[in-house]
Image: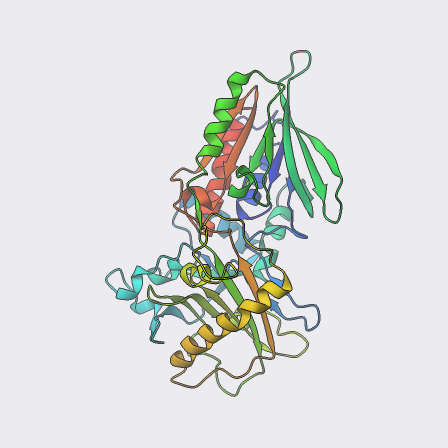
Length: 417
């Protein structure tokens, strides 16, 4: 691209890994970029939970950053490492089956029965790869904010839910532009967020009416001939199915022996656990004011699906999820804890985990999807502007695919400027 004269206004809706990758690539090409995210901070699933009372922190979304196989994604990871955003983690990792048998990563190969685990998460990379693993410091929740801060000036708008994108016809020969509307956190009043030549939506829910994060695309001011291009984009999301998970966050008093006989393990195909990790074993982690060891356990989608709804099934797999209220989470806590205790008791040679001093639960209801679309991103040029959908729902779950999708979306935007 000729980067010299590009000064287009571009909006990124969603401040996760994909949104940050797109924003940085566009900003470095000379675009004026604004990132809008519903959360209090950017990060998406690359986030961390901090308990205000104790100071305990948990990586409850993204767990580790594997060494990418794609050269472009690998270059981003090398950049993060050079800037001190991430550091290598030489933890004891492997695979844990339902019987509590742990197989170190060095012994897991393509012929191993434990290599069959495909929960559609970030974790399956651990099963066959012995390449270095990384974590962000001081927590994975700082990865995206540090990444964005390392790029040219990008305006970040947190606690902002984008509700509509209205494509207005250009005036006096100018190209059409997307006028974004949104609602700030704690407010009910919709406001105009600005006009942009290109918009990149980085959450599949943005294209699905009735779901949280949906962004309505309004092209009423343009000829109807433009509508099929937009309908084609959103229709490709219709077959995506959510793969839910629950994340249990535990704090234990320091023991005279290791909490687990490993630092992290991906669940084998027969396990109700997708991932378990002694989170406080990662570099740079704090143990809070109480000095507790922290453990993160993430359920398999199959196990989580049985806890999503209240009452006996069957339930519509595509139905809206119940609100994630404290009461909702409390009613599922013991079921998750019981499963985790049973599997880790087996891993500890029959010795149960001690009673936790801290316990919290988070639901990732629709964060992961299957099947992947099999393309880096979805893009449509409309009236001289463009709309792009990107995320790891395009190429498949994982940080490498999230990076590649974001960079591909940026390249499609730049090609149309």
